[in-house]
Length: 149
Image (cartoon, rainbow, N blue to C red; front, side, top):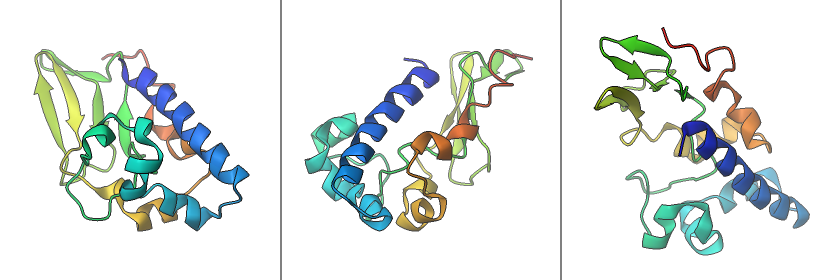
């Protein structure tokens, strides 16, 4: 599955949950709290494949899943640039000290497994928008898609 396919599929899952929560009359804070990992593994089992195994994507006590992708992640399924004989397909826009670039064959992808930035409730609250894709819009800027240097 490409980054863009995952992104669009996830946006639909997220939107479906948000619609349900809005119909229930939940406030912004209640919506954010709903996306707490401990609630999501029981209330929204199909939201994340890791939920079936009661597994977190990041080792942190209070994991919030509202931003199941990071607004600082940048991706391009066709590649951003060449780095030697390898193509960079994703990177961290803030160059988090807890992230790294992983090399997989002739591809370079951002590895965010050590970074917890978007999974803290305070971060979600600061960047909250009922429209997940609005928060995430910078992740795949249209002007870079298809432009491999």
